Image (cartoon, rainbow, N blue to C red):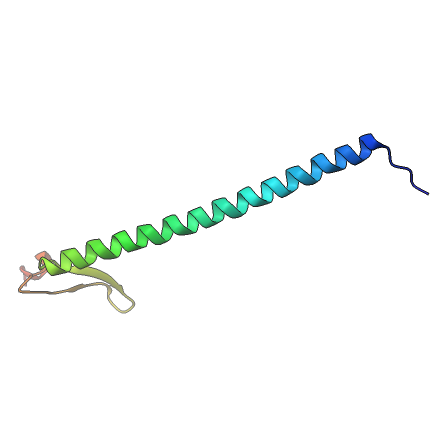
Length: 83
């Protein structure tokens, strides 16, 4: 049968502690990264809403035309003036 010394048990304790510590740190960093991405998305949406309220155009991707501008409060696209 296997015989373990106190030194073997201490090494096993160190290894398990390192693995648990690294996994907890990874989970914390993942949660912080997700919160940061969500905060950045909220800032972008707030900026778009403010721009729309000022009368600016919000450019959104469109599958059929590539890019389409939403015209608000008399805003004219610069490339539409040539037509």
